[in-house]
Amino acid sequence: MATPPPRTTPVAIAIAMPGVEEARTLTSAVHGRLRGDLIACRIKPGEKLLISLLAQRFRVSAAIIREALSRLVADGLVVAEDQRGFRASALTLPDLRDLAETRIEIECLALRRSMGRGDAAWRGDVQASWAALRASPHPRPEDSAEAHEAWSALHARFHAALVGACGLDWLMRFRTTLYEQSERYRRMSRMVRGLSRDVQAEHGQILQAVQDAAVEDAVALLAAHLRRTAEDIEAAARNGGIGEEVIPPATARSRWGQGA
Image (cartoon, rainbow, N blue to C red; front, side, top):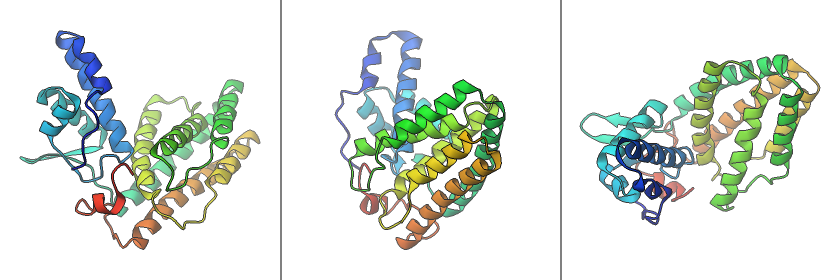
């Protein structure tokens, strides 16, 4: 297992808060940190999550770690194994295909509703999020983790803005879950070179269709964009000789490296 980061983490700040509220705050803080690490694949798919080591890392009790991991099970980012503890959810090609098609259905429905209901404020938010994303160069595989994190945040903002006028809370919650699960696959695939694609141009085409109020074009472009991402990830896995399991636990660290 990789060397734990310095023990001076934001989680420790909450230790001064007493009683039940302290436990809730600590659990939420640990859950948030682990969630971010899982989505960014700093914790590798299939990696064993040892409660004792996590408790040492965050300087909290084992009970708080168990509660945070249980929440992550509900999020679909962690799996609980009978008598064996917890493990980061695996990434597999069958799951990727299912996830991609489900996300296309949900995301396109949300975009269609947003274009039908959106007002000037919504259109302004979409334009602003696109301007910020366009101003940030798409990172290369060898760029720093910080560059990838910054671009990923802008990318998430743009896609969220596109569907921001959907108006259905349950649909948007489900959409967020699908986005986060998809992001895990995208983060792992970014290490692969040689895929010829202008992602920013695709985003620009979607934005233009939205500005033109061309609903069918915007929906078709978004669906093609999401499907192309899934196809590229699958091609990357195939080219790497990985097979149906995108990141096999036994080879995750040597193949992808820590902090990928």
